[in-house]
Length: 555
Ligand code: ADP
Ligand code: ZN
Image (cartoon, rainbow, N blue to C red; front, side, top):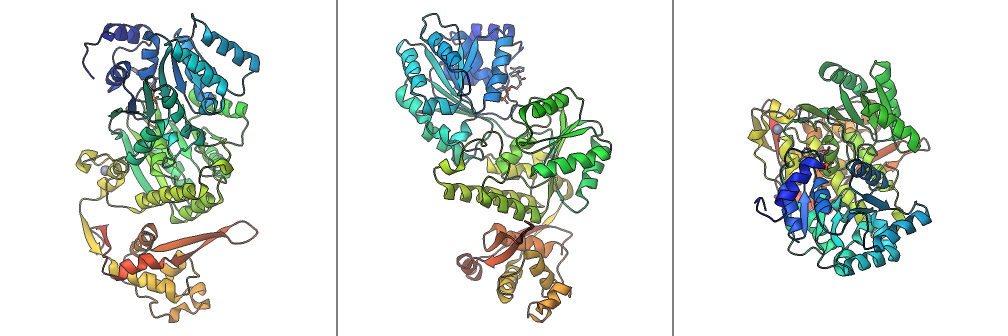
């Protein structure tokens, strides 16, 4: 697909320069364009900022007829249209919150033989719920004027993805109605299973797949323990590494955003918060201030970032645990688009896991990325399986954070089904930086003791309490429950600090122990107790070994 000898090659190059002002193509752009213009269905995985839009806007410009683009958010669509109109490319969109007469006018224009539009953007809801639109598309198709169908953010089709949107699942209808019209599906994030899901749900046939590495060599990754003085740590980190530079701090809740922003302001940073409870003008104001460098730092929920194109974001900090590796990768991806070195720091505490898990189980209590917000959760196809997927995704994230040996890049890229040789990380992640040697340790016996201890104490206590007993504490809480008399009290006192907790957390990640999270009192604080998952424990006692890697300083 990279050959220059297609009938459209000349026109492509001329327009790329003249209309879009680009001197050349970025990796895979030319190949994707050639494949879709040859009439194939195409699936494109390209990292954020890779230049996906050009792969359909350029063909739209030089092909006969109209390109239909399905995009999840009206705000994204408006942004795209603004850019297209600036480049004198006639484009429009249809959305439900548009005046009826305005919609009629656009639809009427579509029926004209001299239709002025080259691109028509719609939200998936429009396709799935408006017979009127489908009739007009059929009409265009009949007149051979439906050039191409583009599905942007295609991972939203899949329930396994982190941005599932039910209406996207109905988009299969397009291939049924227009089997010969080429479909171009684009996403910046998809694991192998998500990709399969998307291809199948959309009914793509003999689809050509382009994927490029999701590794971002200029991003430096680290996971840092989150302590009580996390806010001081963040201030210090920014001051020492990125003073007066631009960054995003992702927080879990709206309250956290305001708290973190307030604190950093007091420390003298130019900082604001951004979240879903603010009204649109307020949000636009903050975003605008940030774009114009009037403020450096935004403390935001994941509602912030989609469609943000600021090239010089020097750091992305996660103040709390992200909900999935895919989400984490995408949020980090907003740093360093200009290719300059940038930092991604995640402040991790196991207790955040409990908090996020509780929020997920409550459904909706957690702020969604704008892609997933705004649909009614009761409409979901199978809420049970969604909960399961979310919990599984969260668990992978915990496992990522708990791992303090393997290359961060490797851990992320494996998740996207990509092979990666961690020697090419060149010590740009915390684990590669600190580990020159590690040892593998069989911790099966310790694991068994921990499980036993949870049982001995009646499966009624938190993980931190279990660890205290195991390490031989005589704290008030231990004595109150007479746990200093339990046979395994102090059985783990010889272990290095953090080692027992790492093993315990591993047991949770492996689903051998389960955190049961609940609201503990009317103040709304949450508590969690450890339970034993009997079917999995059997494996543990049936000879299944648990091997963990530790830095070689741990004996
Ligand atoms: P994506 O949708 O993959 O995140 P975009 O399509 O928004 O990326 O493109 C990101 C930025 O890269 C845009 O500012 C765009 O103008 C620019 N861009 C895209 N293709 C090229 C190219 N071939 N040369 C230079 N800049 C490009
Ligand atoms: Zn590494």
